[in-house]
Length: 258
Image (cartoon, rainbow, N blue to C red; front, side, top):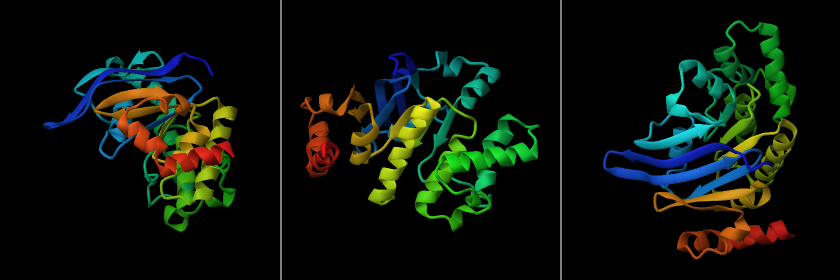
């Protein structure tokens, strides 16, 4: 894992009317790392993700991805950037009227409009299997899948364009402990085999301990710390101590040590 930043956010401000979500927020994501992002309810974790990928226009601040300032790119440069990342939105956000294969094909059809139908089908099946689902999942609809399978189908769609940067918004939310642990292992495997950089929003302490190289803590409208968990535990900020040293945090730490 190199120390070169793939994402750099500086001086970010986001607000909705008079409600300020972020003020002077800074964060960086290093190439090859899995960065966990945590914070209390309403701290703006998903708003930060949406700002980075261009779905939320911040009031001010600078966002650079792969060295490009995202609000100063041409249409062609913006498309090139979007090809290089994949997003698993909270709850999967699959299109209910499309099959799993058709969902995976959506970004392929958007960026490669003349792609052969047979090739589309083959790529979709490959991504589905890569995400840990059987190939016969392809013709099924999201309503026919379990919650864990829908997460993996959404991951397959996020991987459709062979991204080098992967955004995951609460990927293990709603999964049982076994399913969540299996998903964590899959992300580690994909990071290794595909040389991915992962921006991961989660409240799952087990996930943070199991797969994250560093964790960014959002509180007081900014990132108050970004470091490995062991270093965060040395800080005396009340939210950090309550989160990581509370009963659930201690249990997750003990399980990892075991």
